[in-house]
Length: 94
Image 1 (cartoon, rainbow, N blue to C red):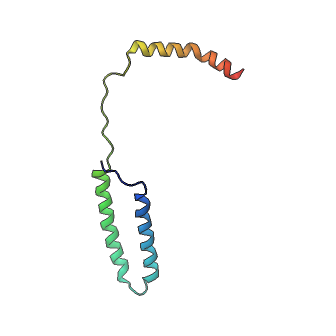
Image 2 (spheres, helix red, strand yellow):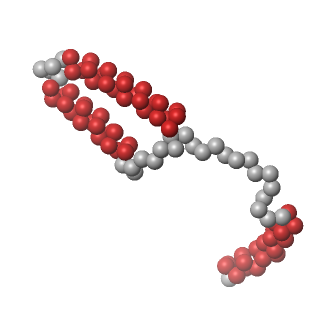
Image 3 (cartoon, rainbow, N blue to C red):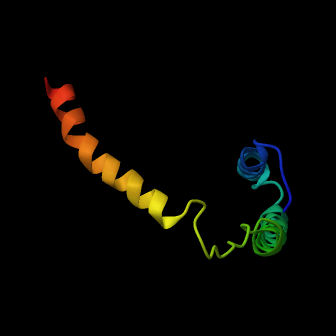
């Protein structure tokens, strides 16, 4: 898994905003800029897709066959909680 800086997504969004600003500013004098921007955005989209599919995948979960503590211990904890819950509620509510 690849670790990135925390503001990497913000930097990519800022890049698109700046590109839109340049296209709005110079679009009338250079009409081919819109086509070039569309091509570069498609290439960037394909690059982001490959990152999402192959690099930024979540860790596959492991199947756990047994819990950490034995069943008897869990049952004892549940029984103790059932006994102490009314006393705790009575203490909290006054």
